[in-house]
Image (cartoon, rainbow, N blue to C red; front, side, top):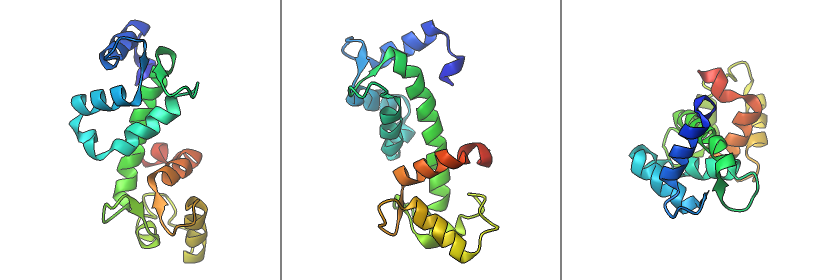
Length: 152
């Protein structure tokens, strides 16, 4: 997405986010602009936060123009992952339990695994061992396995 934009186009979009004109974007500026432009993100704030954290390479708490293209690409990528996550999270409570995971095995291309292997895979993803896969945990797993590219 952003890789197809010229520097001028990227700067123009950046400026629509930069409400106070200081040349750096806070999470608040990013969230408000994304929600104003794309209201469907109101139920996907985790996607915005994940993209923001991914793009903040300097770890200074702001997205600067050099990081903005990464933010836009990350926003698109994590949106795709969220859509996959939602297909698996049948009750849409923002968590995937083992039953959801078993039912979603086709989406994840895990149809050849036995139930024991599937449980081991689930436990590997469930980094905090809470018995549920959260969106951040799913993203870490999906990125390692390049799941978005496999689904599309």
